[in-house]
Amino acid sequence: MASALPSIDLEPFIAGSGQGRQAVPRAIAQACEEVGFFKIRGHGLPQTLIDTAFATASDFFGQPQAIKDLSRPPKSASARGYHALLTKNLAKTLGYDNPPDLREQFYIGPLVSRAAEFADIPGASELYAENIWPQAPAAYRQVFSTYYTALEKLGGTLMRTFALALGVDERFFDDKIDRHFSTLPANHYPEPTGDPLPNQVRAGEHTDFGSLTILAVSERSGGLQVKLKDGSWLDVKSEPDEFIVNIGDMMQRWTNDRWMSNLHRVVNPPAGQRKGSRRMSIGYFLHPNYDAEIACLPTCAGPDQLPRHAPVRAGDMMRQKLEARAA
Image (cartoon, rainbow, N blue to C red):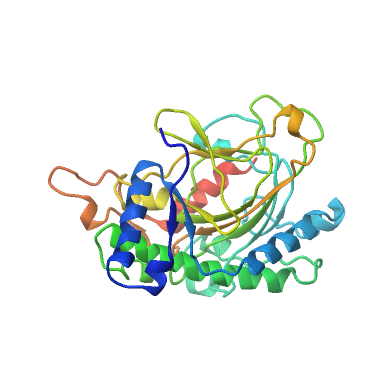
């Protein structure tokens, strides 16, 4: 049984060539087959940028509720703007009837408007909606635009490692993510003020929906857990210079279930450790182009391994998931 997620150094892939560069996709392939999660270091993002993003998000969530509510989107399923406590329910995507999640969020999406490019597809405009920016902190838009751009680039790098790990051309995914609808939510898990309801946690058991997730966390009691093959839950810890990466449902489908889009959750702090347990995370969810076809890769099928899933458009698959998790 695994005791920790593997930590993979991306620097040889980003800057190098030869055996060091080739070893990175191999390590990623092994992690994605065994648990669907791994950590990365040597990713090239300055620690100051990550720290500034956390500080700016913390300032937003520390404001009065009435101020935060000014940034709510028109529809609760929209992945833009502010979403208050108890307005999301990730366990519902698995069909569970659990109480809503104990977290609040602020979402942004692509910085380039693409709604007009997908105007002919009913419902696509919701995934390419314009961003909602808070009036305060004043620096929120600049900080998170810079952070989004950096993670957008890192996500593209990881997709190239995925392509090599799966035996296709390194640039195979480029034209499937060049008009993506990726989101960047800042997640805030406040210090509990009372006992949770039965089966109520900070973020319910779920799998991620897209191709991959890049997550930075602030470590506090009551954190991320990943489900292992034996049914046990692994507490996920990371160093300040590490991101946690996992694949989502679309990547599992691309790989014909060779790679695992694994179950995970964010649990409550124990009753005796609630004081000082306020927690935050910021995740980049790389979602492909709305019209990208999610179909079994040619290297993941054969005479004895037929495709297990019918092809589907990325956007259609995503909209179904988003509607299911609304509390």
